[in-house]
Image (cartoon, rainbow, N blue to C red; front, side, top):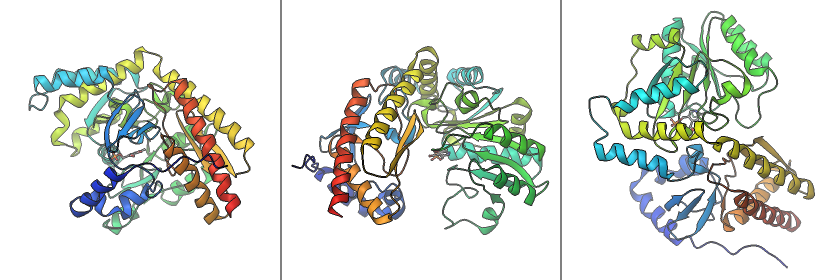
Length: 414
Ligand SMILES: Cc1ncc(COP(=O)(O)O)c(C=O)c1O
């Protein structure tokens, strides 16, 4: 007897998608925006009505336990009341004025007190703002042009992961390497002696760094006269208060943050040592909205809670419980799969060598989990947030157990 869940009612999402297709380029040209995130066609909701804590309700009234969490911008939980109150106060008082708001100084003081090595702060809006600012500062600081980068660092010319619309010259001055492979990194430095302005990288994506890898990478950058820049957009304010620098005991010249820093509000930060950040005065970096106090108030309210409560420990423990449960399910299953990622950002990777079969297994698994009200991303690591409870993790594991059964049935069907 099959115990698969019935399909979700998604007509509201589908109607809105049809309307969007006529006017909204982000959704109409779904070749990139939607297929990049290819969840499971026709099975996942597209439009949300509201979100609270660990849960999201779609426009059809379906409720989901959310492990996508707006790609990691949510660390406390959706619509966190303390953050909402702080933002509401700024909004009521007028948050978009030419004069600076007091909260800008408060946020800079807070960031320099919790981020290792941070002596100066430059506030921006998006992640790409911050990584591009880091590259510009590095180039001006060293008088060099070339960049070595690793991971997803944004969409600007120097790091777009599709070549369309990007001048060749912009691509030619950026190199990359294989993660956790020091020889490939060394080769990139040695191929361009005296030309590298910075090594800018995520500290990890799914695989954690090998012992000593980040420190050796930083040392290599410095030996070659380059700056070492950590892109902590995902790890920052999720792994630990001091981010990957604190977790792995490595020091960067510049660090970029966004996402969890303000529990969903659009703000990013470039932070670094005074010696390097002083170069900000020699370059053009700007944003009309960078004076807005509402997002800064959100960041202060978020970071203060992360600092003063055990929420990050809670996130780590829940992530460990989730990974442990998933590992037991993988061990009991005939499917080729592995549990990867750090506890705060876990992931289940299907590894069957046959691509078609792997795709069918994946679709069956994620169809079942979303139908059971758990939002998991098939192609991107997941996120755990502070509003989740042990009961939520049990619920998620019940859904993934059913997902394994559905995927095994798909294999049996051949
Ligand atoms: C590690 C990392 N760096 C940079 C970015 C770019 O941020 P944004 O999309 O806000 O420009 C992202 C976005 O996902 C990211 O994950």
